[in-house]
Length: 411
Image (cartoon, rainbow, N blue to C red; front, top):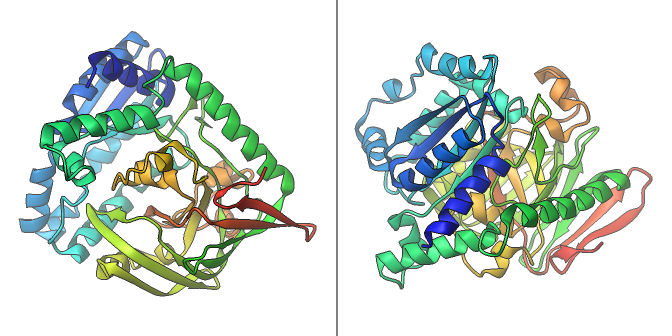
């Protein structure tokens, strides 16, 4: 790993990803393995004018031990002060922004009680709902980025010695995040402009539904929410600050209508959920709800996901990603949704993003429901795009438009 690339990556994450503003507090969530990147992000944040930087460290193996051995009721507790501490920063005069750094073993919780893990996660999400709404509604700027850890690197490159695997994963991350060549800020400005142009074309068509088909058996019709609005790479927080929530990102996405999804869809990449892999899966929908599912690996875990709450068996997002995306072209399966979702078209079980409905950020939960926007404590993306994926859209005027052909944008 080249030090100058790591420094460039960290500075890009802070200044473009989360886009720290003078006087803000940057809240960082980070595993111990990602300390080298976090330290550089701290320095970049102060250089950008941050008032303060708070880093919450966690350790994956400790988290595994707690979930294996701990009492479920205790693990599900969230003391009021914890959420209040986040809200205090967000509501302070300078405000706050949030950076999540990932560096996790994709199968950290393999072999543990999947039901217990899911129940704990759902319970904690419910108790942190007010804080989670800050990011779901883009009230504050937020960003997710990643760095390798040995276990993740060896999963991606099992044939390499550990040190070489970590180096190879670093190189792959730098490449797909547009850090390797020249100025990443300039490259991302061009990239965002391209995605915004596609977003604007999708909005101009006023689609009422999309149909996905692939040779693997996918035959899925997705009706869109009332007033569905297409979004792309960048978002704006309540103060008008531009930020990029996911690094990397290749998607243009919107909200399905929770009750208007029908057909069958087959997963095209393994999905990491609660640090366990679900592979070779399919899901059947009727009137928006999952009525049947199966998986070659961890089928029970898929069932736990779908039973998380009432909204978990409906979808809250549909995203378009071409097969020619840098992540897919790399030929690397990252075993991490942050990367793999940007290699293929995908859908998400669970909550819709309010910003994907016209005026949605100003609506309350009941108003969003009336527009068909799904409500849930989870939002989990699964990859469904293939090299032969065809997507056609039906406009509000009844016209059929080819959106994707052979896995690529048709316009």
